[in-house]
Image 1 (cartoon, rainbow, N blue to C red):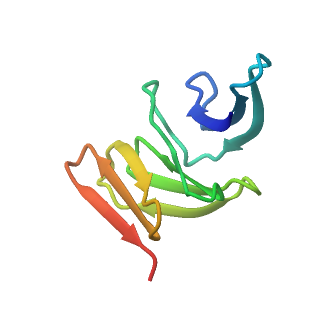
Image 2: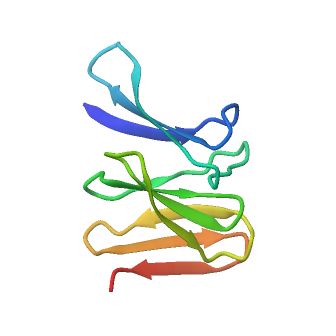
Length: 116
């Protein structure tokens, strides 16, 4: 079984590490992409990024109220959403079928983003 594990490294500032893990083999994880951007700031707590169903985009929440959208194929930042009031965005999630993303943050708000 093959799946992707996405996490950030507190020891590597502004970094998101995307790894590929094959559970059927004992080979362990292989790093397939390192995403870095000066706007990406996370604390040492695990902040779970979200990927679209097709695996094309990654939404990375930050401690500054931003959600950065990366293209996983190119590694480039494609969107910078700043809709939580300069506080930590705790979670982001994509809808399985519809073009909708949801986020929640320490400002007590739940934000819904949809494609127009």
